[in-house]
Amino acid sequence: MKTRHLKRRFLSRLSLKESWVIFFILGIIMMNYPFLHIFNKNIIIHGIPLLLIYIIGGWAVSILVIFLFTKSIRSGSDEQSGPENQ
Image (tube, rainbow, N blue to C red; front, top):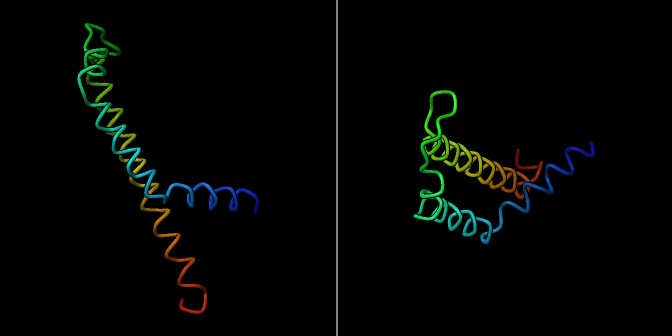
């Protein structure tokens, strides 16, 4: 029961407009010159260049963040509709 409460509390904090803006700006910063230059090295991990791992990892994290935001929006609209409307 406590896990459900913590999950609900975490998801309610993610639904803030400020969080959307922060993650958007972080995504833009992550795909700009300084970070791309840092990871553009001749390092290969398991046959995959480091820059490619960085880009694919960032893409996966952004999809996870979008999933969490949409889940929080959906759960927030379910709570507002109430059990009597279901």
